[in-house]
Image (tube, rainbow, N blue to C red; front, side, top):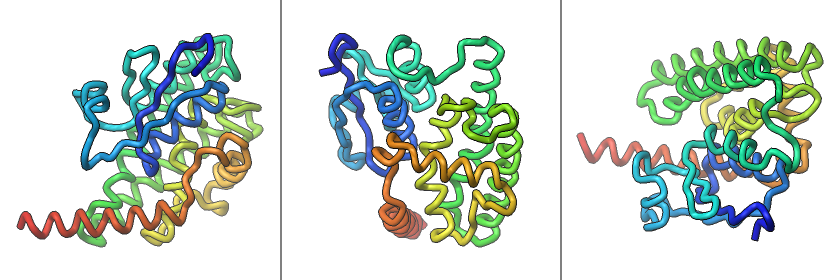
Length: 236
């Protein structure tokens, strides 16, 4: 299965950007794994027993032991297989701390402000969510310049690192945001380094292997929006 590295199984759902993060990390490290697509409307017993707290994907199972939450999974993959493939976190403690800081920023500022865009009921709420997200993305422009040593290649420097994986997992959804909401989150005129980063990231073999088709994401998100609206109407 995964050779001397033990058995790796990833429980996920194709559209989830958080599952994409785990896939990216596994591919970057060159680790074979079994992927199991979960039906989140009819969750399997394995899935529920592996993540009984949050009941969300992804879940990585390594030698029968489950690891949950995408950012934790990515770090675990790097820690558990230190001699395999490209390291995701730098060896220097300060640089590791910086990477973790910006990873937390992506979760707390970008994802948290952006997620409501697909669930809000009014244009005013959607505009406010978009405003907060755009402000957070502009801060990431400076972070990329800092972390890449001014080169603007990747957050990990010359190669993809932990922050690149966390932001990279969102790329298909970032691109889908414009046809879905009319807002371009990464714009070459406002955030040129991030725009170039996204193009560079999408050209990576690992990205081509795991990133979702943008049109498929748009279709999925539109169908999800319809279901949420119907559910909200039924409850009122």
